Length: 263
Image 1 (cartoon, helix red, strand yellow):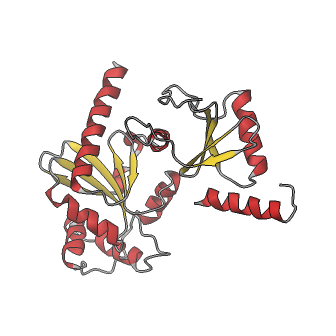
Image 2: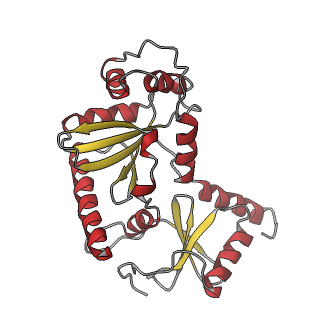
Image 3: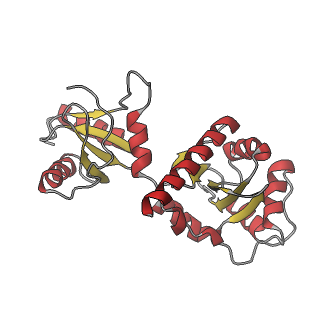
């Protein structure tokens, strides 16, 4: 959405007289940032035409001879001289797959082994073999919906990072502190979403909330819930159970492939 604002601002300036092929499957080995003079030039042109825009992951796309550039959580496409800019998703006409979304998910993956899991509430279900991390807000209705979907999810270890968005939910940070300071954090979290019951404490223990806020900023978490799967894939939203199972299965297969490739 921020990039759309940049475009709108640019269009307004223009009105006021200010100066301001065929689709292919994505190449897994594509350049992911401006590491060549060619890509650096495209990045420089984009930054010159859209001052202040957070440009990253500039690369040659496999589509129509265009370049791709990431703005926050959005992908744009442009020509070598940045004369034209296209905002939107590219789909595979045969499979109906959103190729732009798949590319963004690839670029935005995080290293699971670098997640500070000691800052999260840990819950083990069944054998706990599968792994899932969640950035969650205690007062977020979509987080509550996700908790409901996960009731029957089994054989998974869930790590919940407390991520109160105080602009939307002013009391969420207080509730998060109460839950973290409870003797049994996992039970306190579950009780809150199940019955609205909060632990009886002052919430004045040391909490990781400030650190998880910085962690979310680092990974561009802008909404709750945001899910992180074992392969590092990040997906925002309260996914239904069938999609959760599908994502967990894909992540499990991807981590096995990654492990095999390292041998």
